[in-house]
Length: 120
Image (cartoon, rainbow, N blue to C red; front, side, top):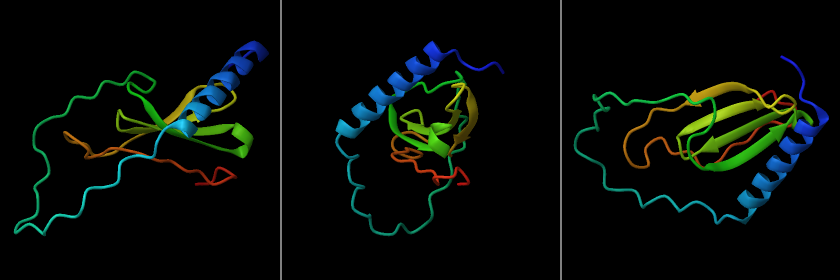
């Protein structure tokens, strides 16, 4: 991996600053619907296949960002129902967390947090 040039690093910093400002101005996610009465039988997991295409980036709006280790580790969650870890220095994708999903809100991610030292 080669480090980003200072111009690219500044551009990434400006983009992250703009994204953080835009996220700070967004209204809070909708409150969870009231709990329904317990069903007689537990809901079975989906049996149909669910196609996901890996693009190397989020494929929908980013809901929240978090940073750790002085901005060298970034985390983002998106409406594409993934959480992604990014190297804040190079801008490269480090890891993707794909939660179980189904149609509707199942698997939706609204927030993300990292320990300041990046350990969690």
